[in-house]
Structures are given as C-alpha cells and as structure tokens.
Image (cartoon, rainbow, N blue to C red; front, side, top):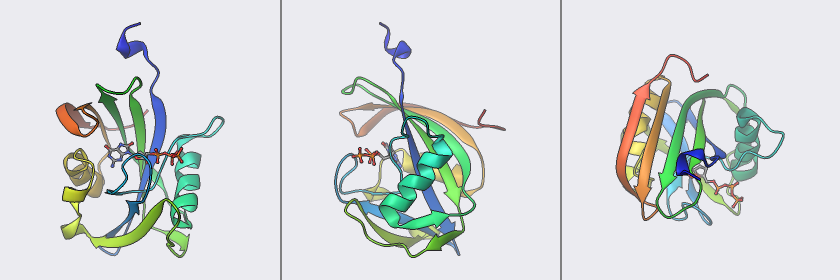
Length: 161
Ligand SMILES: Nc1nc2c([nH]c(=O)n2[C@H]2C[C@H](O)[C@@H](COP(=O)(O)OP(=O)(O)OP(=O)(O)O)O2)c(=O)[nH]1
C-alpha cells in the first residue's frame, strides 16, 4: 500500500494565550518528552477534535477552556514511523480553573516575545507566527529521525473545512 493511503492518527494541540503570554507545558513523559508544548493528545473514538482538545487540556493542565477555536491542521510525516500524525491546533484565551502540574505536564506562562523555540518541536517556530497573528493555516512537515524537518509546506487558509 502506498504510504499516502495510510490513515493518519488524529491528535490535538491547544495553546491558551492570555495577556501577552502563552501557557505551555513541559512534557514529562512520552512523545516529545523534555520539550515545551501546548496541551493535547490522541482523539478518542467517538470524540470530535474539539472535544478531544478540551479533554486533554483538562487531563494535562487541570483547566477548562471556554472559548477554544480551531486555527490549524498540520500533518507530520516521519520516515521512522508507520503512520503520519494529523494534529488539530486550537487557540483559547479564556479558561476556568488553575493551571496545575500533572503526571504528564508542568505548566508555565511564557511572554509571547520569549517563546522557548529552542526547547520545542522544530516546526513550531514556523507556524506560531500565523497562529499568534490569528490566522488559520494548514501544512505538512516531513521528518527524518523523528525530530529533523527535511521539507515542509505551510499556507494560510480561509477555512479549515
Ligand atoms: N507543537 C507540536 N506538537 C506536536 C508535534 N508533534 C506532535 O505529536 N505534537 C503534539 C500532538 C499532541 O498534543 C502531543 C502528542 O500526544 P501524546 O503522544 O502525548 O498523546 P496522548 O496524551 O494521547 O498520549 P498517551 O497518553 O497515550 O501517552 O504532541 C510537533 O511537531 N509540534
């Protein structure tokens, strides 16, 4: 079967942006361990990406976003993994609860001028400018050895449908 026919895994990623800062979590275990990232994970059967994004935020940071909107869909293709990952990227600015450390993530606020891109997935530096500018975007990143980008396509879109 051609690799393009392989169904991608569907995941979510949500960043809370408030008062000139973004809430990120230090990933303590699993895929992306040791890096800062938004909150998210695999969408479960029967869930929409929005429902999955809100559940993962609650599980990983103990807060509930009240105004989450989808901003991007990005696909990651790896030469050392059988399935691509399709990540639905959400923005929120309002939430209830208090960001709290969990087994998986240690949350911290970063100034938008000091996002720690050197300790994040390398694609983030490429799409964050669109994300933070309030644009919608779509793209594909091809990785070798899980972490090195060999090629990418990224564009602003009118709609994510
Ligand atoms: N910013 C960014 N996030 C990424 C990239 N690749 C990637 O998987 N992610 C995100 C998507 C998910 O939010 C998270 C990976 O999800 P996960 O493996 O922790 O999923 P999960 O919580 O369901 O996992 P688990 O409980 O089953 O271990 O990392 C990337 O290149 N950049």
